Image 1 (cartoon, rainbow, N blue to C red):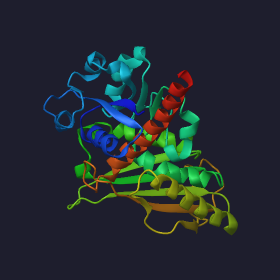
Image 2 (cartoon, one colour; image 1 turned 135 degrees about the vertical axis):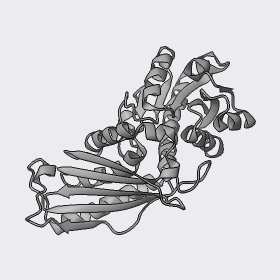
Image 3 (tube, rainbow, N blue to C red; image 1 turned 180 degrees about the vertical axis):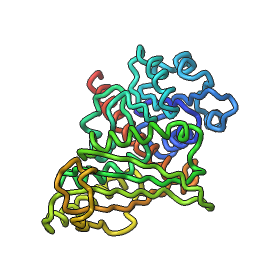
Image 4 (cartoon, rainbow, N blue to C red; image 1 turned 90 degrees about the horizontal axis):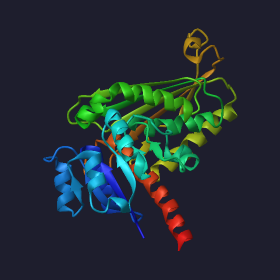
Length: 316
């Protein structure tokens, strides 16, 4: 038996997630699509597809017939709105999957730390750049310490809607923090670029890690670890791939990187170049930044659904 979910936020991300649930998930069932704009395309599509809708936000969701049957609520609004939504839903014991940078709950990157956080009531999906790059930082840090990691996420300007633009500051802060707490780097830095190129380019991500191990055998282990991690992410984000071989290059002795590495000894830089192509369920293929968020959230929801199914079985 599938687990019913609600999606709060009828914009691009929420609508794409709804389509993914309807088309691809055997574990999840759409119980409601929630928005605040009665004229939004997401609510109109949901109604045509037979999904219950409300344009009265979280309060409207609580008032919907069948709300009690919903186990998981995906929030695809904004960082500020999620705080209000989480407070409104708190009395009802729903599991929340937060696709905003609000970070009220633990950061979750499915390929890295989903198992460690499945019991949390509110799981935060970091950011699109975090979902794309933190797995690579984690792949390096599980081989050797990473004093400093820097990520640059370049997305098509056309794929950055009002919600994304409103959360730019939260994006850099949340992603930087998650590079450290989830990726394992001692210090993290995140940069986002809204690329105005036409036709729009798909998401590109650059990951730079400073390490202090000159051993070639360790460098080969890093390459193998990154390849394994990319395969793990591609299992739930099929358009996720390396653009070129993992590079491990010596740091020139006169390059003043000690300011970045916090005084740690640095011998090499690991450079990883990624591309994320969207599945085009609702959004164009160039919007890989949105697709990786909804794909990661779907994976989290399905794992939670597995827990719910086990609990139901135990009660029978």
